[in-house]
Image (cartoon, rainbow, N blue to C red):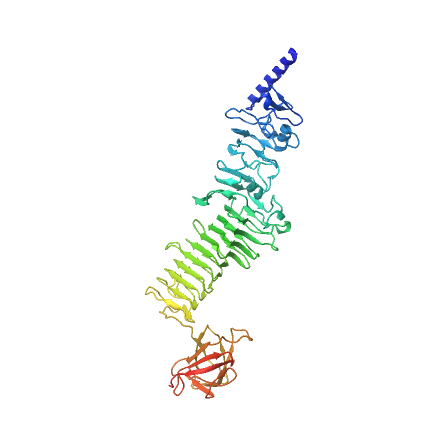
Length: 605
């Protein structure tokens, strides 16, 4: 018996020395605290746990240690190249461990000793390649970096806490983060194409290649220097090196879909799709999510939509590009918003639909047609030295608003009942207002370095549109001459007798200037023709007003006769600028009679 005890003590001494030399720990527990063990494990020396001669300090929830030194280290008894998660866990806990518990202090992980698909818990922390990360999955205790590499990564075996042992998918990296995030967690994407997910498409309400959910963040993202900071920052290697793609063939029809109040940042990458069929939206901010992106390209080539903000979602974009979509590169629905700025490089947006709030600032550009819907508000705020640019047309629905300062507009503006204010801004084509209000303080109708407009009519007001006049407004036409407001008079020059005058209604009130442009005699037996901008089966609106005036005094006019389209009690009337012709005529449309009714004549010349 004594010999057996001596051998046992000798073995334990050698075992303890070996573990200590490797930086490991021999811990003890009292006999009464010893829980039942899995097959192959045994207690030695009043509770030291070992398996096949290898000591360890990691424990399952059934095998907790009661006391640890100040800085425990876990080498698992192996060299760096020999350590892998499956082998380590099998050696310590058997082939099918149920859980791993880490008491307090720091455990040095050498090699790949990750969080596999079994619970890891406890107040302890891992030291992985110098990065200390707490094991507790409930909340963060400090900043951490998670690595992803689609070419060498492994979602099942790797811990993702070093570039040597990265995850394979962005989804797995995000899901590995604690539920409550109080400190910045940076997910680093290596070069490559990320079009796979660790989650099945069927498990998500929106089958997207990246669907972050289930995390609570404590602060919003922001920019600091050249990079973004925040609770979750996803960082690529550059727009030409790191790509995130939906994968509709595998069921993932959406790109990143950020929802349910999640706040997240993406930078230095491109979101695109190699497949062109059955692709949803490339980037979505949904239901009060906040997505902050910097140096991100949204390449929607041959796709319908690029970026969508909906249900209270918000996107803040700095030095980004949205382009290529067949429908819209950017859609901002009511109650949602987007902010776009160019700080160090360009920020360009192609075609846009604005039904919510859209802010462009400091050098950002709209390069395609932008529609501001009835609930939309487009704010364009540049600086004197870094102006906002609008290269495409701006279309404004009734109720839509545009506010701009230090803006250069190279396209046309057409507003139907909207409100527009442009301060210290410039435009080179035509602003046409069908009703609504416009204010142009300190604005001019040409773009520097030019000193004249590209068109003969830079400002057209129709259907009661109101200009709040500012003396600082500069209106010049394409000849460089001061130009007044054009209230939308249409010129009609008949090509001979019996001419049917085509009508283009401009709202409730339409004005036609008629005449022969230099001819000595007028055109006889002319009639009012069909309305060209209405479908054939649709009548003009009840009470629509049509004014006919001379093209110019001294120029022969036309004879307008009674007929199917117009009711003229006297049978005919002459309108023109020569002696004996009337200086004008007023018609009102009667839907019941389906004709234009003559209600007034101007004096005869």
